[in-house]
Length: 104
Image (cartoon, rainbow, N blue to C red; front, side):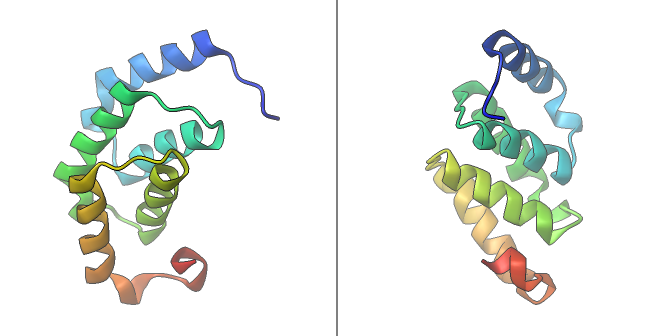
């Protein structure tokens, strides 16, 4: 749709940051994906996602979550090197698990 409400997105980011330590890989990749899909970049939320993902990336239960998070970071032009390196390392470690669509 291309429509978004800035007050709503601000409220979502605040709520997410309060509980982000409870997010699993899917939750982290979904919140990142939703902001990226709307071409929104919320620096405090990105930092919170990065911090949580760095602690839990080896526990992401699906390579889809790795792919979605990588796509979202690229879409938002995020250059958080520790997170990008962790994503790359985990992707290399699990490369045989990726479906062809996730490699694109």
